[in-house]
Length: 383
Image (tube, rainbow, N blue to C red; front, side, top):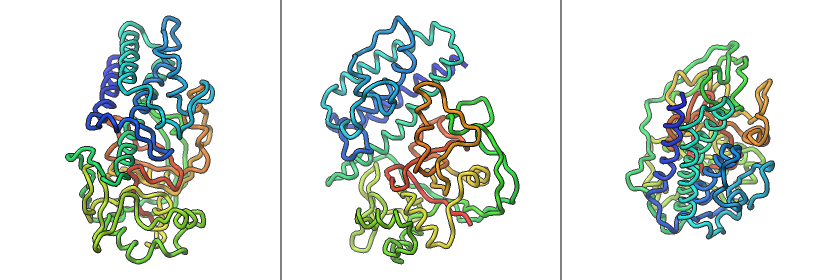
């Protein structure tokens, strides 16, 4: 197990750098909006996590730079002061070169300790959390890079070989019978604390779609005036539409009767049968209303997911992000990882094409505010 963890740690650290390989030096500091972080900040923050939670527990360890905790702490109030999230893109220093030196320094100290020491259960827990924390930020690297490039006037290409379109099978309606079902993570493999404890839920009979809603289907919604029909939208969502002048999914434009979108491989015409992407919960709900259907709950999704393929897009559910019965958040600063965000957010299930390897499972509970849509999010219907 120790050797596997060391290998996973090393592979994960290398993968973050690989994701950034197509970037120009000027791209590393971009932060066009508050919810997007600069690539160089992600590289520093994921390094700080191992330093703050693992290495600083060792008396012999010397921090790389005393200011880096202030720069690269994200939301851990118990670990000291930090810069405002909106200010991350205003820092020309530390440079990307200095951050790469920081990564090398921390990686060397981590590798030396992991090779020479027997790991306690607590250290294994911290190491696994740090690895999967970085995998989360790898997905954020992709989505933040896409937003930073895709909202520019010239729409620069990240990687012309990157493929976002997905072919889907014909639609089938899959049935699930009513009854008591166990949900939540059950075995000894890694999971986050918001996935436990396993518990039972009662579900009524329902049907769930075998595939995601396609671009072609969503275009029908647009052409039928879906964005102008107040009866399809939550009151809060309608306010969001009007105040942000939203009438298309993120990155979409209509030119001479045809729909185009920015993808990591460049600006191109919409592929009709690929899943619609970069959809907010507000839009997913309104589309389901238009179809006279609904979104599945997260528990329906988890029970039914064995029946269909998933992983092209994160899938909005109708479930609020809240603790499971008997939930206990971790002690100390790690307890800030999930529990304090269990308010005003919706759960997404599955994973996406930019989710890192070995970072998905049927019980994974992703969560975002309902208006956000820069992640690779899509729609699966239920009835």
